Length: 173
View 1: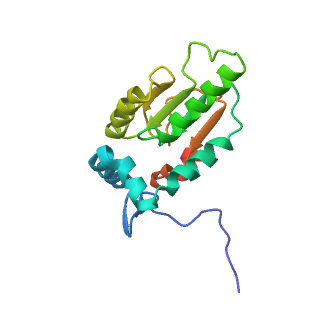
View 2: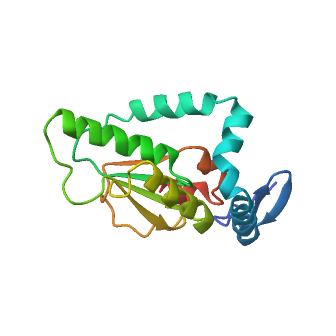
View 3: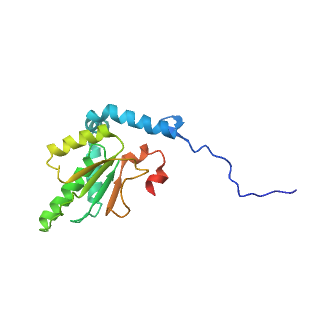
């Protein structure tokens, strides 16, 4: 019996991914995810409270405490949506800087990046309500192709938003 070997890999359809229980094209998933979040942006935070019984707040607080934040650090919160994790990070950095008598400089310590402009708009309003306008910057961008330089941040976070990224390997790279 003769077996021929080759370096060629079987052709894969890299354009297919999952959205819920259906198979969709990568472009279609990005659009579908965007549509979902645009439609719920105004009520997103209330929905999280209702669906988790408020437990998401405890998880997020623990998550932020585990980041090892120090005054002067810059943090990128990917898929940051309405800003809840980014705000908690900014508040912790500002508290620690005040405690240590340090200044975070003129650059806001936290950048919240999300692919959905509607979620970012809600977050911007919430930043004003919480007095964090100067502590957070906003960027509309795709986690798979970030508009930032390498090593621009000391920490990069992404939590539940990772499940909505079409090509997780690209986002993690």
